[in-house]
Length: 149
Image (cartoon, rainbow, N blue to C red):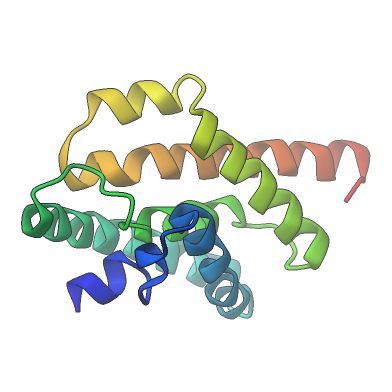
């Protein structure tokens, strides 16, 4: 069960861009969560954050490698956070996907700092949650201040 979740149904096992595939694999989950009341969405997002820390920790211990590329549950959680309180549409999904992946790969401050300083499963997840929060803040700002998107 740990490997199934850590690799998000084995998408993380892909030899090509496992983080990108893991993020794409989060879209159906975000669609399901978007059907819920916003507070229920937040509850699930928080629960997924906690679960992902335990799953990432267990998978790291099994592999003996910190933040293995096949662990993509962190990308799933980061994308869930990125889409929090945003309308579920192809425009928002695509915008959130592109910005989240850019931030997750580039790792500007504070994302890169968190990635380097925090070890274990919580470290695996924290930088992606930070990328998700920043993505969400940017899209909220664009959406509510300009009406664009």
